[in-house]
Image (cartoon, rainbow, N blue to C red; front, top):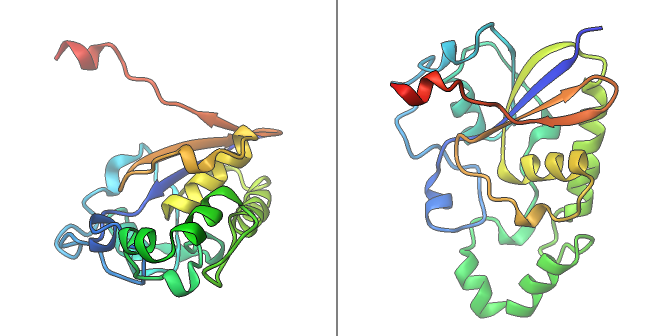
Length: 191
């Protein structure tokens, strides 16, 4: 049986990330239209390409190809009334509420989705992929990638993981999900 190979990739940088704001449905900071398909050959064979529904994820997916399947389970965490708010502003106006949210994965003081609810959504989606052999590239958001890593590593410490724009991790399923870290050929260092 062929394994499921899942590459989770964070969308490219947005202005909201640059300004340390909770996201909205903002576009990419870069001119993605002139870069369309520029990363199509990044993978040896053409993978299935999935994207979260938000504009920033769809625009990033367009860098890898035009045949993209939108997956609702990959949508970003719902931050409720905090959407678009600067984290620094929350630290001034709602410091205790923000800290409670960071400390308690069951809380959702913003009126949106808790970290636990997000993890349950990601876990359900990963389960649907277990019988899907082949390579899938999924363009999504930092919170989704953190949730997937926390599930695979069986660790609640997902808030200790920084996910940079266009960073990627690879998970494999062959009876159980495993994190796969890619190596570099020593020849690459000699050039």
